Each structure stands twice: as C-alpha cells, then as structure tokens.
Length: 99
Image: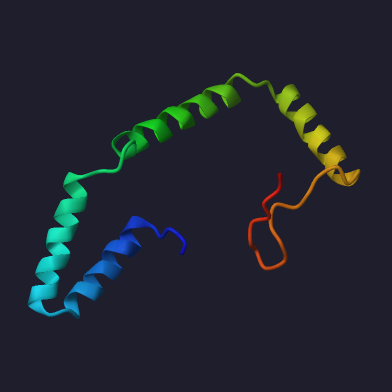
C-alpha cells in the first residue's frame, strides 16, 4: 500500500464514511479521535525532524560551489558509464533492495 497525499486520504475517508451506517460512522469518528489523542512515539516531532533535515540539505547545497557540483556530476556520470552503479528500480518500478 502506498502512502497517498493527505488531501486524497481525507477525500477517500469522507467517501467511506458517507457510505456507512450512522453507528459505523460514529465508530469511525471515535477511532479517529483516539488516533489523534495517541500519536505514535516520535510522530509528534516528525514534521520538525523533516524541516530540520531539509534545512541541513539546503545549507549544504548553498555552501557547495558550482565547481564542486560540476565535479560531483562528472564523477557520477563516469561511474554510470563505467557500469559501477546499480539500478534502484526493476523494470516494473519496484525498489531493488541490496545489501
């Protein structure tokens, strides 16, 4: 199961809820309230952690000169042309796990 954008999930949950009986809709609501009041460990900080990580990446790229980026690109292109890399996905688009 893939993770869908929040907007899609809310739309789908609304469709599901509208097709349920009132009692089941009430249960769905109560379950949602339970989930909201009992976040998973670390879930509270997830957005903060992602923002911190993105800021680190932005700073790293800002501190990297164009010459360094060109050198990195040339190195990557050389590794690809020499066959020193492996595909990340198979022909069907599934991720290939490697050790």
